[in-house]
Image (tube, rainbow, N blue to C red; front, top):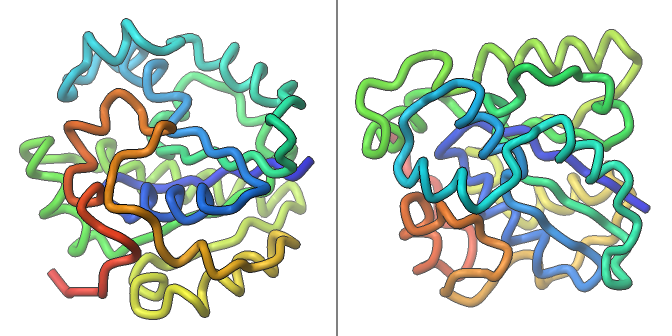
Length: 211
């Protein structure tokens, strides 16, 4: 079984990339499995905080252990976890080499204006950039080879970048990854109504526009 973790910052087209992988017949996607854990441990105030914590498992150690043990994917062979790097707090990183890890990066100038709509005056911890860099260095030191995807390049040439990404993951690229219906997905986290409004109106990766 091919298990993949996408490590991203917020407002970083990560959900679009999750939607892209969700179009594959061989792939099961899970949306931000550590969000409840992050809210519980940090106490941070996010839209829908109480609703989210009541809906999901907030024990991050249990959640990741359960995902590592997951073998029944309804006949699918690929497990794709969309993760926010900042959610990985107070959890040991020893599970990381057991996944194929993708780091989705974006120029902070392109991300911060969008993030500030939901989180006024976001700080470094809100972006997860520092932890993303630490995770990358940690994996490299362990001999792991994380894949780095630049969101700008993905938006400018989705087909080419997805083909390269699939090649690194040893997956066959399929054209269906380039588009999806303009609607919510059943895999969306309960927080989708606060964060995914624009994506639910899209049918594919939007053209890059500098902020």
